[in-house]
Length: 341
Length: 282
Image 1: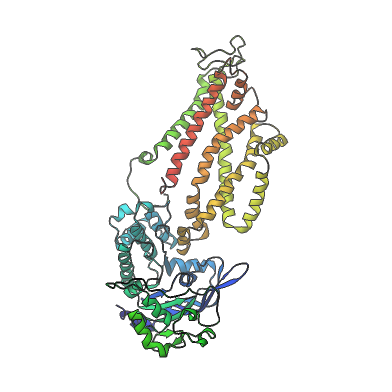
Image 2: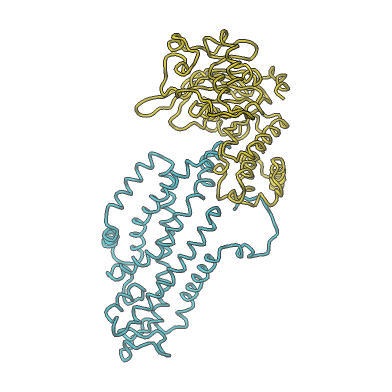
């Protein structure tokens, strides 16, 4: 499933992010949320953006449809959706982009639906906003969309209020709302994190299958490498607002070329393996911008030079890049580290 | 839900059966009061007719709720006052609710409007409530219309402040962000997603204010600034009855019951409305 989409790579990517810099500004200071982030997503491709809390992954995702926090600003770089530069759109064009081309799925389905509107009314509103007026057609498509996301009795469900549905059902509705107008790009911000572990997998599977069927591209933000392994084609690893590594899921997860990725993989608990303690990466992400590699203070392989000069995201091999001065010499050790842990 | 695309055949008034009992009971009570206000004066004796030979009479077959110190029929006066008091409650609540809520939404969404409106609001709430109302009425001259103006100038503030706070909270909710992510216009987000989620608070405040304003109206009547004697008004009647509380308690007690009745109706309506407006917390 990871290789099927590589054929489309020749077409214009649905999303191109280049040299993206985002800052949070308060009265006293500006702090960097994303620095020089670059990646692209091909049509029909599922791209995972992973990182720990505060790594800037949600901020990057939100910048794509102009939903940044009011204190956050894109200060440099470019974001192109289907070739269209997003950061310079006026509000009308941005609304048009949100209505037709890009849809977002939020983390917490319990809070992503309006509590005082029925499911049917909320889905109808999405289509009305997109210019559909025919009542019967709207009704038919709501029923279809609810069936697509696996909700039984759509005719009854559409009259229900969000609080009358379970968390999993609500996330199904949220997915239906996002997909109902067949957008080209889905931005999913930890879509399963708030759900019960038992249904996380179902929802993820559903999202994946629907997008695959309709040929939609997905940017999936998550902190869960298991999720990435399961549904993504390519992956980008974000650390302290910088992209430290990108590549296909197979490459990155089996042979990481950045010490952070390796450490992240090593810290995943493994099935069938008894551990006295969970493995952790010592230290914490830097709280302010530092001169060199942001991971250097926690890196087991850091050299003095790492803390002085920031590594650039260097392309090596087909569709593969990492930002580590030592990625070449460390290659084998990192793969070993990641698998043994 | 207005935009629900579901057309289903339903019996007329079937929706009524789905509304909360408290809403139906409260509306029925208000309907009864309205009936009394419109039809009552045709059936009851003249509320202004003096009968100095029958002052301070206890309730009897002739005067069901007794007579006052001028021999006027208490029941006739209560019925006659119903329309005055209901009107006062209505006209002091609805305009302040609508304008106060609108201003609160504007303040909650626009920083500049917020700065201006909140300073005006500070000015209004800085004065003691009664002093401000009395000052305005005194400036404009006594009378019921000027009382409405005074009530309006003071009354919007509590709604505006309440709604502003609610809007600031609701606007941060994820469903509002989700609505924006779907490309809805700011006006649509405000109207369909923010307002319905904040409206229950001002509506509840309005139902309690409905009673509070009737009492204010009564107080103003008592001070000679509102309803002018001899036309009956519940608060004025209680004020008059206060003097005769030991000899003729019915003079104050029955108008008090009337206020209690309307209060109960308003509270029931408010309770029912909050269930209808917020199905998730019902």
